[in-house]
Length: 94
Image (cartoon, rainbow, N blue to C red):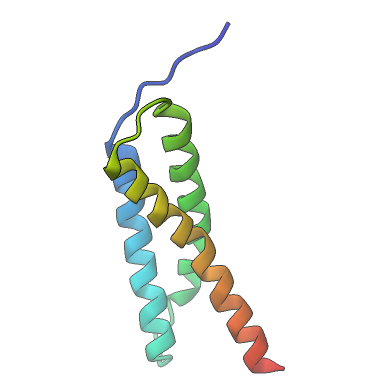
């Protein structure tokens, strides 16, 4: 028996706001590394981005709204950007 999940726009919007906040923490950490350091929390962005990406993909089958495509683009950015930063830091250390 297959259950259907209805799309609730507040779940991805809440995760987007959390990711934007974490992105700002990471940017602040990259610009100014003085105390207090909260930039480590921003490496949770891929987790929240993946949850939102998967939720939108599962619940909005057949709906191709521009806003959902933009949100999926943001989710991809939030999943990839911290990995790029980690790679950049590793390159700088070598």
